Image (cartoon, rainbow, N blue to C red):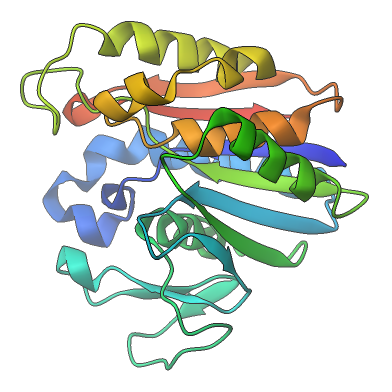
Length: 242
């Protein structure tokens, strides 16, 4: 049963070494992520699932010890799911590298010194239907008596003309509804987010959020929005469900 969940954005820029000179611009987001991971620990889960969007070929399960790297972003920094890893460390836990979203999540957990429950990662197809996502979430919730989720995902990337997806007038409304649903633990509203619109707005968080919605069905959790902003024209949200 799902007892707690945390929602965080997943831009590699959240990692200060990747952001370099722009690092202070996301300090508030980092602080909120640290707080929400702490709330997960307070729920005393017996297992934690790290869920995030993954490109084709990186869908599926990533066991504890799986390694991720930020080398593709020009930084010689590696992480492991369940602990930090030096750049020279070899593979452990699995041969596939963590997708970027899970690497950011692993960095957040390592930064918080997570040692409160076993961890497993799950890379979700950003094009998965709401029904498929909800079914995945139900399976995660049914896998233990006290399950927690750390859900990584961004909102639209079309909030300004300088955003990765340029300006789309629909983006602000999409993000407002997503923020409201995440902040109130409104599972029905999350499942109602349209995949096609999310794809057009480059909102990679849609599928992971719908996994969360499926996992939370019947759990009677309350939601709280800790952070909402759109730096660089991308919607970032941090929320806690408990």
